[in-house]
Image (cartoon, rainbow, N blue to C red; front, top):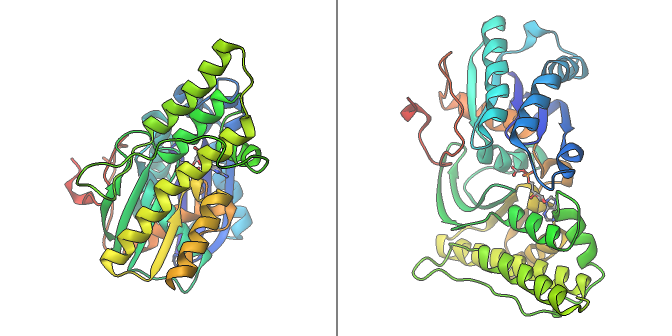
Length: 341
Ligand code: KG4
């Protein structure tokens, strides 16, 4: 089954053709990050306008690179939530029109389910059940993935997502948007014990997280030094910050896996690209004899292949959308699609 998959939830426009959930025939991704870097973050209006400009061209190119004609597409899939509403609507509308014109089913896909599914593309042997930490610019959740479309959140951030926290801390250190990668590069030159930073715990909710205190601590260190005219150890602060984020994510995920009895740990989303987080997971999984799955870098960030992969399993589970499909800025990963009005 060939699925044409569309992703436009933030600042990447992506179109992919995926066969039977696992085989990526083409994967076109156009990032607008450079345009948003000027403003230090994503400007929703600019994102929507740019999606609209490029989406048809990307879809043509995805079909051409897949070596397929339009008649060989069996379904169209699209990210319908969560994300920037105007950005999502561009993809949803395009996908609706494409499905209607081709006379094929329309499959709505939750963006974070897509991030998890990036691992199905990367690891042909991987099947649920497993425990997943999904860490991106907009979401940070620990998910009990019982089946391809049967999952529930067992822990989540109460405020900032891990990626958002990276971006904000990077900005304070004068690094460009998106800040994750530049922070990682700066951290590589620093001592991760240079600064003592907070690791928040939520009473009675061992798998929940909070990153706002960490972000504020970095802001305060930078501002206090600025006011006193002192230099900060930027590399040391970046390294200490990165260690604090990893220490908030890795032990919680490992402890949730122990409690639920999972031997497979999956990491997904843009922050899964982080070298420190990957290394800490590798070490923890080695120590506990668990198997770790983390996608290659190109599948960590937003892409269409992950949407096409998840869409296949959504299709098998009977998930379909009609012409009334809407986009949603927020939507739980375990929400039943049939509840949508
Ligand atoms: O998954 P993604 O591309 O978009 C969302 O679905 O949100 O994630 C983007 C986030 C950004 O916050 C970016 O700074 C972060 O992933 N990121 C990283 C790294 N590469 C990207 N964070 C830490 N280390 C990295 N190497």
